[in-house]
Amino acid sequence: RGYSIDIGIIEAREKSSDMYIENPEIQRLLALPLSLPEKISEWALADYPKPTTPYKGTLYKTLKGDLVKSRAERDIADALYLARIPYRYECVIKIGNKSYYPDFMIMDPQTGKIYIWEHFGMEDLNHYLRKNTDKMYNYFENGYIPGNNLICTSSENRPLTKAQIKRTIDFYFK
Image 1 (spheres, one colour):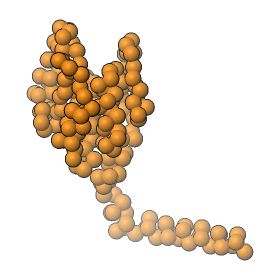
Image 2: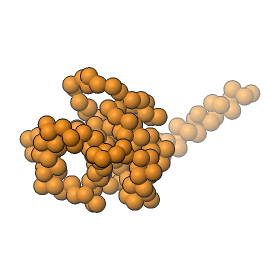
Image 3: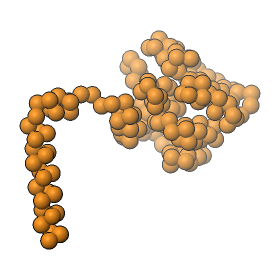
């Protein structure tokens, strides 16, 4: 008896799914763009291109499971993760004929807007400074503007604190 009820349920599901598939109004609704939560979830779960050159320094594991290059990056990643703000670590971004790997690419969970977060932790090294000056110039020239869609933090004189990270996240995403 239970078996025949299960068959009836299966047949009813098949009929209702056929009705949806054959209905032009339903097809139109299914063709609409994803709603914002779906778009954000899909973006957060998607694979993305990462650097192919292996890193030779110390790596730090985040709560999300990413391996990052510094304690500050780990703290930023953990704060974003705990705030339920989707991010990608070192996701490639092409600007002109150059590829960059910003520390974090973030999608605002309220608006779907993309932000880049660069943390500068080694300003005392000349090669690091030159490389990042070029990168920042290209960011600015291509619409990534601090306070708008580009977040910049630094550890030049002292380590970035968790309180500073939280304030930055609250400013941009709360």
